[in-house]
Image 1 (cartoon, rainbow, N blue to C red):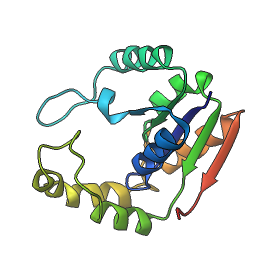
Image 2 (image 1 turned 90 degrees about the vertical axis):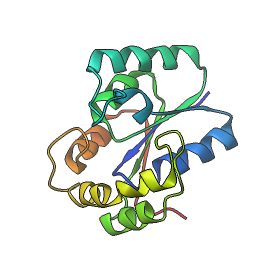
Image 3 (image 1 turned 90 degrees about the horizontal axis):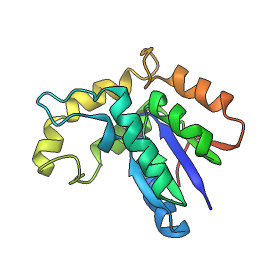
Image 4 (image 1 turned 120 degrees about the vertical axis):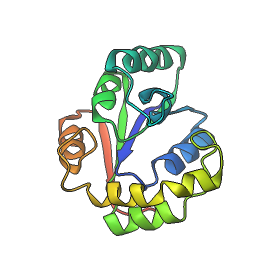
Length: 159
């Protein structure tokens, strides 16, 4: 059974790609955003140990899965159980265009208006992909991709 990790910049199409795999291959889908953040205003990351516990519970509870997100710290925890990774390495311009055209993510926002209120912040975040040094940076994504020993694909455009 497939166990796939999908990662890349915000707006790269991770959720859309994961949903396609969920439907085509009968996989259970996990968006890492759902276990990475506390329900606070402003949002804060959960302690890593809490996210790890939820992630490992998901992995152990599902035979086939697709996990997606930009969090290399969490992806590294799931990597020993994955048999494939997919790096969506789209251009910043493509990611920004995708973010502007993103449908309402009801599992993350109370309304489309609330989602759109964060669009300027999201565009700045996407644009900083090559400058950041954190777990969401291009460098950390490249390092994770290179270190993975199983099947892997890097896509620079989506059709």
